Amino acid sequence: MLKGIPSLLSPELLKVLAEMGHGDELVLADGNFPAAAVAHRLVRADGHGVPALLEAILQLFPLDSFVERPAALMAVVRDDGAPQGATSPDPPIWEQYRKIIRRHEPGFTGFEMIERFAFYDRAREAYAVLATGEAALYANLILKKGVIHP
Image (cartoon, rainbow, N blue to C red; front, side, top):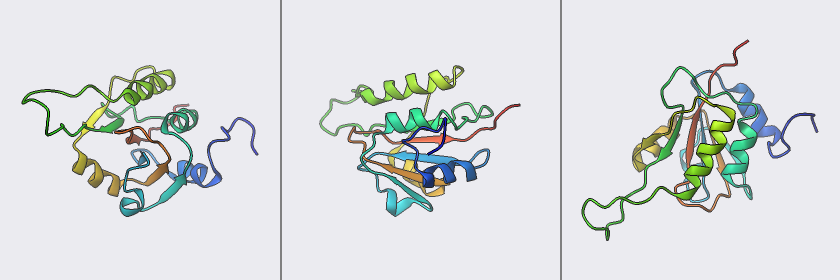
C-alpha cells in the first residue's frame, strides 16, 4: 500500500500510467469492448466501473492541454428502427464522465466523438487498454496523456 494512491489502481495499472508519455493514449473499455483483441498492452480491472476508475486515474494522470479534445468517446450507432434524421440521447454515463473530468481539468471543453470502427482502430494504436467490468452501453473512453507543469 502507498499513501495518496487510490486503492482502485492496481500495481500493473500504476506501472502503465507511469510508463506513458505525453500524447500516449489510454482506453478505458467497457465490459462489451473487444479489449483483448485490440490491445497491445491489456490491463484488467474486472469488477470495476469506468467512472470510479476515471476518478482514480485523473488524480495522477494529466490530460493533454495541447490538443482541443484530450478525451474521446465512441459515437452512438443510430438505431436502424429510428425515424430518418432522429438522434439518440447521449448515454447517461457520458454526463458522469464530463463531471469527473471537469473536476480534475476545469478547462475541459468536451469530448471528441469517434465512429465505432474508427474507435476500434484508434484503440489498436493506444498505449494500453484498461478492460473494466462497466455494464453501461457506450462507456468506452480514450484519454490522451498530457504533461505535468512545474
